[in-house]
Image (cartoon, rainbow, N blue to C red; front, side, top):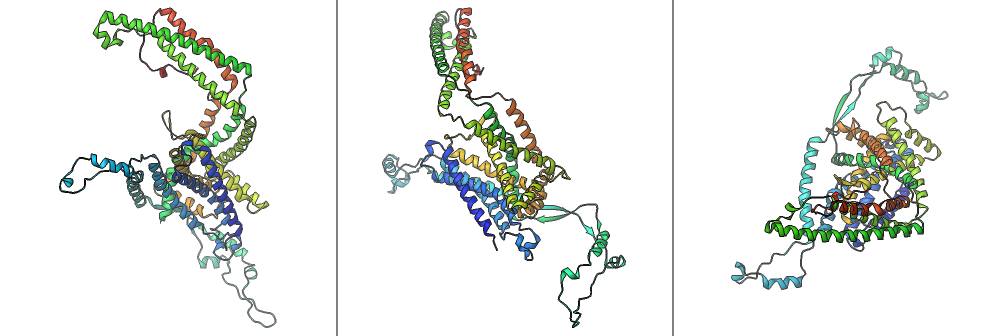
Length: 599
């Protein structure tokens, strides 16, 4: 019978995920997508629910304890009664469907251009079409109309699915066999047990009054078996070498392992970044909280910027006049050749470079000043303290995760069970406290992956693709980043399973990931050697060092005030002094971005 409490927990968790997904969508969406793109929004919301439900499936599986031997019928009081094998199979299929079908189709549809004209426009175009052979024969002309957004999206999706299905079929054909290591034990024979003094049978008990055989009672009949068990244990011999049992995994299990393997590459990066960034972001937000400028300092900064703008305009006009005079002089001396190739007759100088650099710095200061004014008006003074609280709580979770990984997951012989013991201790207070703790730690791991995804995202060199920005995120960025989050969902579950292996020993997902998936051909090279786990720790360490020693960029009033004061006279003075030294300006066409370096 299904535990009613588990059903209530599932319902509450689903409602919380739904509300959180809607808030996340509204908070980040771009104003241009408001009241439009409903199907991509439903896909994004479904992705959020799917990722969250997959993560929460682990604590549900732990509470259900479906792999406990007593769940077969003789001790069901310990079991939740849910068919978690069916639960996981459904989600193992849903995740690939979302990643390879719904998200690509929504992206293709959202980004496609609707080039099909309305019927009235099509009728107007028809008379302008040149006659064809069919028209000459008395038939209507054939008009080739552009494809609609739906047809474009379906065509692109068809090509993608053909490639994906082919790769999935080949992967299952060659890599779906799991070689599970087993250790064999040899017990003694009946004759050796008898010779050692083991009693292999016992006489039935009879009633003292009637002499009838009494019903079998395990408590009484086996009361004298403890000495026999000790003798039999000494007769058992353990083989030194491990054997392997080949096992063909199911289709759902294999594709879950394949999706987890692909997702591990992203989770190792994003999760490692998030483990360090999530706590440090809150703490550094408090440490580097802005210092507001006084009204007098704001007026001085505004006046300083205005003076610099006027000086740059004057210098620019002077440079323009000198350029025109120089151009006339060169054209007079060199004629047509100088007109066609003016750069050959101009001496290169640093005057224009310095002027462009000064203008670039001025533009940056103006933008920073405007951003500071806007943020200071909307700034909540309680935000740094809330960030400090969240950062402190996140620090506890991150430190616990790192300690659990170092002390339990990585060593072949765990130093300590750590969190496994802590969860069992919580269960001693209330049966589901340990399960709720597993849920908190697992959800935190997914939040770390999301934080790393939003911070780092998809980058190539210094470029960021599909960034997530509050109030400025288009549906294409939503879809892409939710695809990355879905890819990280199964690795999060797998990492939590191997980290909480002792506490989750009766969970169905443990039998899938720890017993079957871990020893699949090819994938076992990464799973058995814990390649991804080591990567998470290394990336987390590098992120910590980077965030602690990187140059702080923010709207701190002190930094902005000092920068404006230092540049108030430096930039125009540099340009003016350069002109005074040369007496004239020569020019080139190099872009300002080469010279516009910050500070």
